[in-house]
Image 1 (cartoon, rainbow, N blue to C red):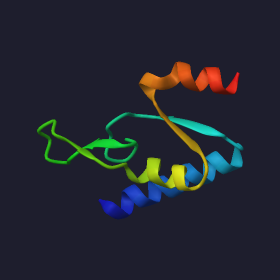
Image 2: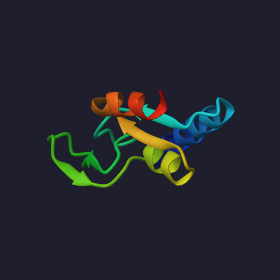
Image 3: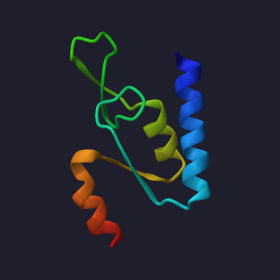
Image 4: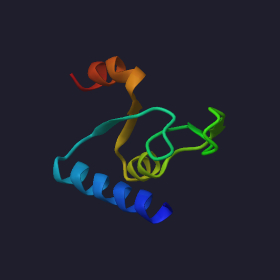
Length: 79
């Protein structure tokens, strides 16, 4: 699955760059989109420190990453 996660992250970055997106809203705790804390992959609900492929790639590429619970913060920053 790693190659599929990586491919999806690369495609997301491509689209974000094409749209000149300064930020992205991603699903919190997701193994692909979580930022700072993600599910550990055991399907037990256990969390671990880390970021998903997409969140990490966007972040290191200069695109701000927000979880869905921080959408108001995103709106305030970019409005």
